[in-house]
Amino acid sequence: MIIDRPLKTAIQTLGHTQALKDGSVRAQGFEFEFEEVSPIIKAFRRMVRGTEFDISEMAITTYLCARANGKRFTALPVFLVRAFHHGAIVHNTTLGIRNPKDLEGKRVGVNRGYTVTTGVWARAVLQHEHGVDLSKITWVLSGDEHVAEFKAPGNVVPVEEGKKLEDMLVAGEIAAAIGVSVEHPDVAPLIPNAADTGFAALKASGYYPINHTVVVKDELLEACPALAPELFRVFSQAKRAYVERLAAGAIAAPSASDRLYKRVMDVTGADPLPYGIAPNRAMIESVMRFATEQGIIEQPFALEDLFARGTHDLLG
Image 1 (cartoon, rainbow, N blue to C red):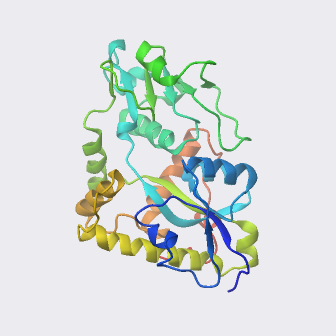
Image 2: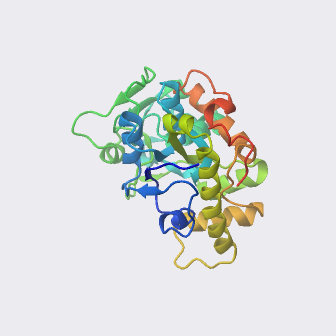
Image 3: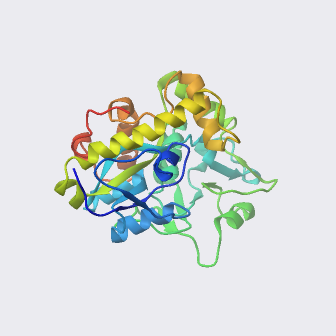
């Protein structure tokens, strides 16, 4: 395989991608041309709306929505970001919200778009762990969607012009919000001990949400079938070096993500960033089910349609 031009690539510099960025792990048959995009969500939008990159990191529900709307790129089963989302929901403590069910009939803010991955996982927590009827909540968005063609359900509305979710939450104009950061005495997490709750679910059932994957232009995958498995190989090689350092406690000044992945490793005794369909099947199927329930896609995809040919049986 030889591709005679650099492949324009937008991914974050993370512990498990650093070796790709600094060249200590190199691909065979092509070169990366990295563009630093901060925050990385700007790259998602550019990829969805203009296919500006050959290879791009992308939120998994943005990818599902894009795929449902015929966008010409396909994911690798490489999952660059994982997180728990029980702590993403905060509420105004003066409004008498005693438990998540009390949000029914209320307005709840969502940072950026309805299809944002944190929102999907957090709403699933409300629905499946606390019995909340999501259709009885009005979801108030602070931004628009990456996929311009997406049509939100009828109970999804934009924030009023000139207003901010954070201010509305403090003022009690919305009862709660997902994905916002507010330091105020009247604002608190809706689910107490959220981090421990997430890790308890990981230990009990393997619950471990996927946030970001990697997508590649279809025209490249079609022209060069060897590209997808080679990309999977180098992403996996770069990640393995990071996991070895993580296990050895050899990461200086660990980030919040480093600490999260180390705790996952301690709980599971396994790689905290498994790549491949097989070890992630349950979470991939879960996020597709939640996206379907929440009106983001009409029905789940077959996994063989969701990920690039040549990667379906790979593990990394």
